[in-house]
Image (cartoon, rainbow, N blue to C red; front, side, top):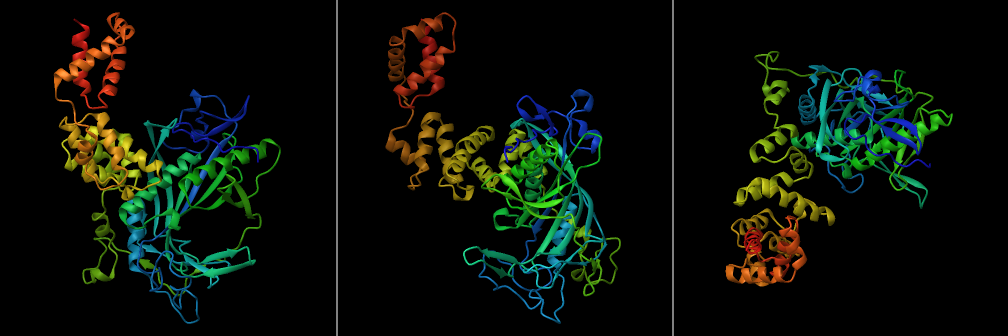
Length: 547
């Protein structure tokens, strides 16, 4: 496929597409506000030109519930356990075994529903969804097709405008429903021996399926919405949501249509296990469909997979002959009844019921609230709060440094994001794997704040700390002789030598070009190997140049 993966929609750029001189290109478009009730600051139609294509993206997210045991059996849940070592008789679907609902899974689903502003159904039902696959021993999945546990919610998320963190817009995606269901086993395909092996460790693990309405229009929006959901799940503790371990899997439904017309035929891209791949898969699929239609072809209602090596989606199976899942009520499970404080019977044992209000009262601060508190408490920029929360463990690291240093939080955030985080990303390390602890970074920043070293010297010390040799910042300062020069007479002599050796720069400064002064300051810093105070150097240079 000649089409390259398209770039993200850039916040208020509804990803409508139009044919230009260089082929397919993005255009700012608000037609989707008319055609599909888009949310979150879309440009009004009257302010932009017509664009012939409007993409529509909806998501189905399967989140593995964080629980010690499975949804309907007592089997342990453990990632990467030996194959078929965590399988009960019920998981293997032996005759005569019956499901027993896991209370923890129900509470996790209620908690998630409340966090996503859903209405919690006090009575929900379980159903059997029939289909045949080798890793589904019973031949059906227990799910909630008719009356799910939570409905009609919404999720707020933010996207950058033109990839600028300083320009963000908040958008909303509606949550159609959240339902409890079983996970299937895992098929392991051995191409060498042309055989498939089945591991049932995952069979019966509790899942929450979060169904998002088609309110998104590009890969960037889809990835941002899933990332926000991931943070919420991790904050609640209802799911660890580690995509690399299959604890959060995304199916993306993508279609394109002309403004004002019904939605086009959609394709489903299954089992995407990375936010980056999600963005690429959605954008590629949008462009593929547009090219297909503009070349006179048709879009098949099919299931596709994203090939991360090729950067494209590939067909898996078609859906033209709609599969009959033969949904039926689950005969071995009664309706799931939940209570709130008003409906809870007086003589009911509180340990035997799930109280919606009790769970609601104990909800932790969600990511949006945490960001607002970080901005208010530390005076940092809103975009910095997003970065802190998006990196696992970075908020705690930042707050630990702030609590152990005399430096103001506004300065600390620069060192944490620009110096620490950039190094970690460069070396593919997590915050927990950082060779520089929050305590050590705080020590370094205290030396800088006390004016015992310059910022240039501090960066040299930090470079040494990355080696992880166990030295303290003070040890390195003494070893490398990086202390600030305290002898002002020595510093004056160095400044004079720099002035004497750069007559052209001196003439430019005296002619009114003050920017050249920064060059002289840098030269003094080089002469002193970063051991001079730039503020003092500037004062000395200005004094000598005015003489």
